[in-house]
Length: 171
Image (cartoon, rainbow, N blue to C red; front, side):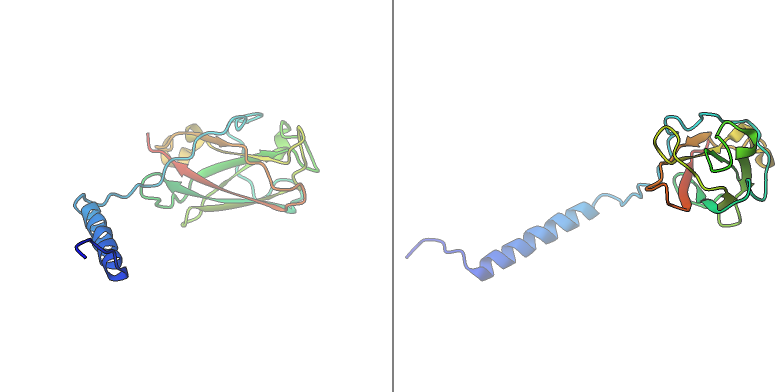
């Protein structure tokens, strides 16, 4: 017989050679880190925003925690001392009420947390509002990053925490 037979050994060695060549071919181009993309502003995020809301220890009587992180786009470095404002429709007030607004600063690891009353559904959805507003990040002379407004929706009105991530884009 003069025909070519594909044996298991031939298939394995050909497959390994092809896979190795493909893998090595990808190495001929320098590896590039994709980087961390900036967080886009969410539709409705700025609704009822109050510029310059005060930094507070807690909003109202508490019982619900807004938490999160603030990092720099690209390398993901934590951003300490950044001012994050929060507001929501809660068991104690509407999101347009001044007493439903407050701000806090990120810690050395770029993390923040602020206690507020339980969030309740508004317009049929339990949600919070958070903002990084560069114009009011006075500790950093205007911030150096683009402003971002978030309006994350909670999984359930029974949730007692809402955790978000800000990835800020330098200006």
